[in-house]
Image (cartoon, rainbow, N blue to C red):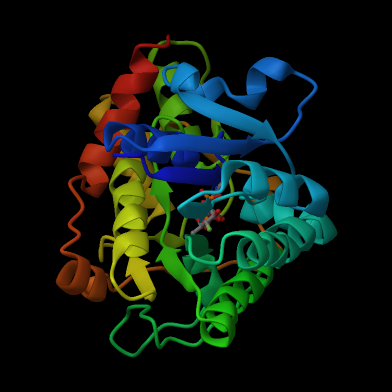
Length: 323
Ligand code: G4F
């Protein structure tokens, strides 16, 4: 039997690396698009263990000929569009680039998909950042919650989300949106708050540093594990009907709760080490996220294996092996 072929944009990111491992275990042929970086080792550093089993192709979400070439060469059965400028705070510094990559990039890959492999299935990495500060009366965000983004990142993701929905309806494509709430892992970039807190706390414990500088500690997020969320991506794409799903844990915690858990796990008091620095504040903040994953649970039978605590334990263990 011929193997299913997947093409992952953003394969070198946290989710791309876990998804490629997950699909290889399911016996897929996995292809991914990577951008050229001046430090070549950084292009695929998260893919070290699986590199030899993945075929990578140079491309960029803003380079239409490169997307057309890769989609034509690979002829994928499934496309996972994970490529994005993924840092919300940095999107305020580089709004144009963010819109080009996270919104126009979706249009570019959708066009390649529609014109070259319209029978393939398509997954779009949509984000809870699209909701901005909209919350339903019962304190959750669900598929019907209005999208009122509060960052260039969120604005771009709303356009990408709508384009995918529109292409599904207009052209009969199997194009799906997964609205994923925050998801983390030991592979998370060092400038996202979970990894920053865990890594610095472990360094404080080891006597390597003494202070952790943070921005807003009162914002709340619904944090899950990337490994659970890439499983959901595959389930969403392989559901009979192309559709939209929220992927979240349904639990919310503040940045302060995060500090409290991580530091106390290491027998430290976060209040003695954390200082606030306005440099890490955002011009407009998304204050509160708590997703309602009931549709994914009921329709896809998706369940997360990790909790907030076991996710952080996994990250702490990882950073302890690095000091
Ligand atoms: O870890 P964060 O940078 O993640 P954020 O902004 O929620 O975005 C992540 O989740 C989105 C899904 O909702 C994704 F779409 C997006 O790609 C990304 O994966 O910040 C979390 C919270 C924010 O409220 C931020 O203001 O932590 C607060 N925070 C406080 N101090 C900080 C810091 N965030 C960062 N990155 N660095 C700080 O020093």
